[in-house]
Image (tube, rainbow, N blue to C red):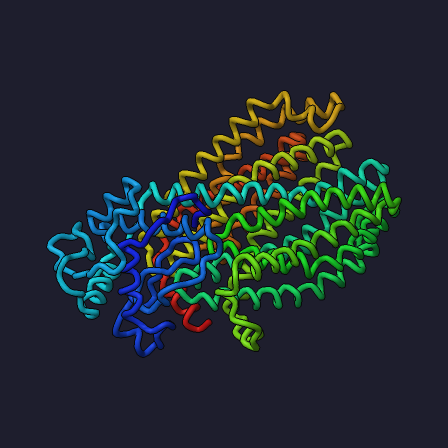
Amino acid sequence: MAAGDNQDLRGPSAVDHVAEEISKLGPEHPPTAEASTNVSMVRSYRKPVVSAVAPLGPGMPETTRPSTELDRKEAMHEERALLLDNNITPPNVGNAYQQGDIDSLPDEEAPVQSHDLPTEGAPLLTPSSGGKSSQQELHQKWEDAVLEGRILTTWQLETKTLSKSSAPLVLAFFLEYSLTVASIFTVGHIGKVELGAVALASMTANITGFGIYNGLATALDTLCPQAWGSGRKKLVGLQTQRMVFFLWTITIPIGVVWMCADLILMRIVPDRDVAVLAGRYLKILILGAPGYSFFESTKRYLQAQGLFSAPFYILLVCAPLNAFMHWLFVWKFNWGFNGAPIAVVITDILLATSTLAYIVFRVGLECWPGFSKRAFQNWRPMIQLAIPGFLMVEAEIAAFELLSLFSSFLGTSYLAAESVLFTLGALTFQTPFSVSVSASNRIASLIGASLPDAAKTSARVTGVMAVIVGVTNAMLMISLRDILPSLFTNDAEVITLIAQLIPVMAAFQLFDAVACCCNGILRGLGRQKVGGYVQVTAYYAVAIPISLSTAFGLDWRLYGLWAGVSVALFLVSCVEIIFLYRTDWEKSVEDAKSRNENG
């Protein structure tokens, strides 16, 4: 799934004509189950490029409204590349594409005639000076190409696609991460109690709220791209509606917990003042929960259509406003501690309204089915993916938060060093996580398009990118080990601890990146259940016991705490790689078809 590219479109092409002719072969909407038995996978195939441009394949509408001009140009460019790679584009058209001479391509009205395919490498459809080809022959040749697996992708195309879609995600996730950091930076200058309270509130909110929203919403990483890849565009909007209402329903028990947070935290945290302030922060934060959950759902709605830059543009506006409001409310208006959660609430509401406005005025309602009672029906397939997705995310979030809790028993310096290491780990995680999100959307789209071989290629490219990112992160941390600690603290003891532990963190960067990207591939396949089981087992049956026994039993202290996490990430990487190598990708295609048909 790629973001936009500035390729010039100055005239019609023979490929456009071929796409138009093929699109006329089937009805505008997907056929019924009875009809689909006659056309096999043809009716389920849709061109797996990333933007809302007319897909190739029978049974699709002739044209669709482009999301943006930039996305339209990029989608057309990638479509041509895919056609060239599979020898479907006529040679003379392919040469013109490669040379960039689009104006020299055959006119859209030029007649097209199909020919027999003497070899597998011959073009599927070639223009001719003869008469117009018959619809049955065009249909049969397209069907043969899909059934014979001739609609493939390449390493080069997947590398370019995943790289382009990952780049804006990295920036978007950094901006999103800054939303929470703003509270800590702003409130930290009020006093130690306030700093401890906002840190405790943020940790509680992540475990009991935001982590739950993010985990459950990963179901859309499967459902929306697979629906988009299959050409059922209205189903993308319907699945998003279901998730929004589902998350709003989950907000009720989350709100109850946050309303009682001060009473709960006072039984856990020895400092009563910190617990009371943290509870107040969470009570105010409840007002922004519906907006945050809406943003997480609609963000995936946009990503499924290949609009990976959209969340970045939205956060590029909202993140600076969030920082400004923190300063304005806390210091300028003298609201003190209460100003921080109020700023977060307003930011969450802005994220939701900005995303909605972007969809309505910039993207269009091509994938929006309108409000329907169907949004409250057939939740079971969504929940079957959402619960394991929740386990995948929540298991890791809670495990790392527990490390911070355990480090507090080692002393103040160790707790401070652990906080800095946790922040560094969160920052380096944004890059592999961006590749993971890009891969899950790309692979899910290809699976929805009934192209398992192309999905395998994309998964292999994702694996290589994960290794490159992991090694790069490790090298950066090692080379900057004497510089990074001083960016966070001036305490000599804490700086020494951080510098000593950075090589340990660098050592597991590779496993962290690989495990993260494997989870993304699993989401694309709709195999969140496997990832959920593996994550829970690795962290709570292996990592936590190793961390506690080595940190306190062997007196390895922070080395021991991070040793357990390193072992867990290594196990997650190995187990999920083995599963992906042995899994039945065709079954994922059938599962996707079943979900889309019953959508």
